[in-house]
Length: 294
Image (cartoon, rainbow, N blue to C red):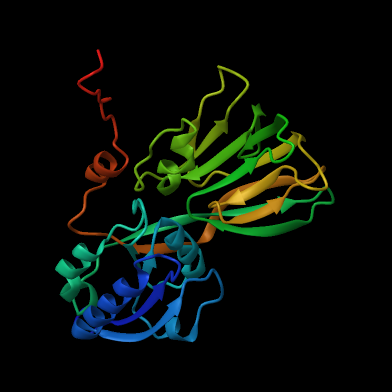
């Protein structure tokens, strides 16, 4: 967008300790260089009327806030800019210093650099063939053992071809963007967000031969629970982005493929993905020892 001042909607996670101070500063920067159409609290709900009149949505919070708001505004076509006041800020690429430096371009009439982030569409399928759409995921869909935490078994099918059975504590199906989240914690590979892939990673697999695998991002992945924890007070659960939960019962299966909607994330033009891996995730950092060791 060029030639006119942007209309910006500010979405704030009010639970963050510095949110009030940061939101006041963002309001000033937005009004100085563009136009603030409104401020609303972060909530994974319907798109507000203010958003319909916005050229840009600024999400103030952490990575979790950006995940929720990304799903909320997916398919709207409105660019989403994440400003981190949380702990890590890997997905939310901007901090307040970066916004101050780039405010004229971000909120005025400059060109925005965006990245289209595809989402996963996740369904629970019943034995009668009916399906319930649980939701979309930006990072990952996880089938986790759940209470009483006995080992579960999940059959895997990729694009209609039956694959192995995963036996362990569950399975992670991750987007490239989400590869640096739960996936990497479970031993899965880091995938650059521009690589069109979906990663399947076991959680505590009961097999040395079961390794994570990357498949095309357009693949249809089906998980058939063979043995699950089906308890009245707990049980095996499908979790999306760590925020949406849905119990899985006997006879049900999980179907995961690419969603029709995507999220347009604003890229920090002064940032660098590899630098972020090193500085925030400490990629390949060597262990440190005190002077009293060794």
